[in-house]
Length: 486
Image 1 (cartoon, rainbow, N blue to C red):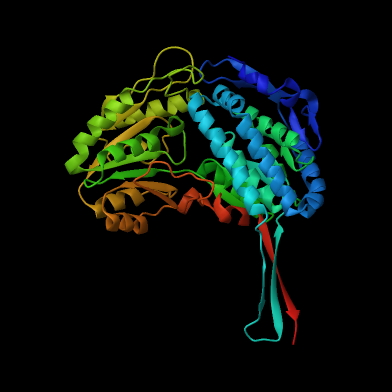
Image 2: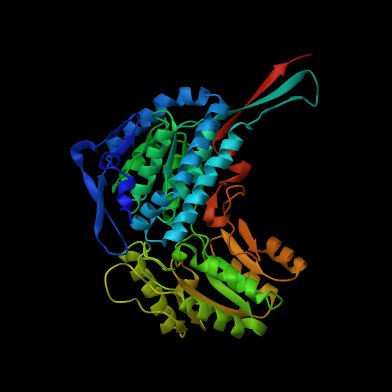
């Protein structure tokens, strides 16, 4: 088996700024660890404010030429990136697993998902349109011209280190914007590899810049304070999103935010239980539960609650846990010790308040940041895990007796990213679709993410949409010209 680090040569573990791979000012570095072992796997450049502003210099310098590049040429470069990611899927996936912890099969799925954003927005690049029309009063014409917003700053999370970057970079480049990406400090290697792949695909210097740093606050703040930055896109916690929105307000930046979630998964008595079980396993355990769209609370209608719970607990208990690069592993390591400690505390709190653990519930001994698949029942409404984003392989199950009751419980949260409903009744599904305060809903389906669909939440789960046609609009300003034509 090849070493996943072979995919990224040492010279490409530095900052990608303009046409160069360079050390951070002063030569500072930080360690990246394998969460399954706790061992350091690489040292990467630790950028400071000066490095971040150098990346903005590069993005600003490349902006005019990239914006003027024919849409077809931009499309071809995005297509070349898609093909390169597809051809190199295994080596990219191994690197994702090594630095993030997810099982290799899931890492391969992430590569396929991330690559699709480049294919989708390659197609959208040549379909950016304005309009020309006669003013209703006559006498002049209305012309609208879409234009790229300008240099963009992206702050991406560790849980999907390729896909979350791809979901931002692809539409930005399609629209004619240049970019600076600050990946999560836990998983910078995948983004550096993506930048290398895009360089090899022919994307011009300065269009894709990557700044790795442990000093995210000061570096990102400096970028947002610079008037040359015109767009911020962030994926991460609502808490951090609020801070970034305040900073972005000073320069009135265009922003898109994909923030936290507290998804309710609802299983109705008329649902096909086999479908519901399959969907619940995906919604809960995809990416080890480390996902903003993970099922955080599971509500099952009373007539089928016992059967569903028993079958779900059996399936959760049968999952194997281990290093994501090993064969047959279903559940890899969580990202870091803080994540394990948080989940441990949430489970202990629920048990202290009267919940019962059916499966799991106790972290294993040994190295690495592991927590077993866990199912709890009799979880009281005041348990902390029902209001927090668990972000791990823990599933609280509660019963319900009416649609109005469960809808009220599902909506009783500051978040509104996604929900899931399993029912055999179309009218009931439509009532949930209209009644649940979420930006997205999976109906008889536990997987909703798709590059061709608008991804995003309501309330404190975010602003704007990623993916679909709406995704490219986030990177376009619109100029309206009134043209006199009697």
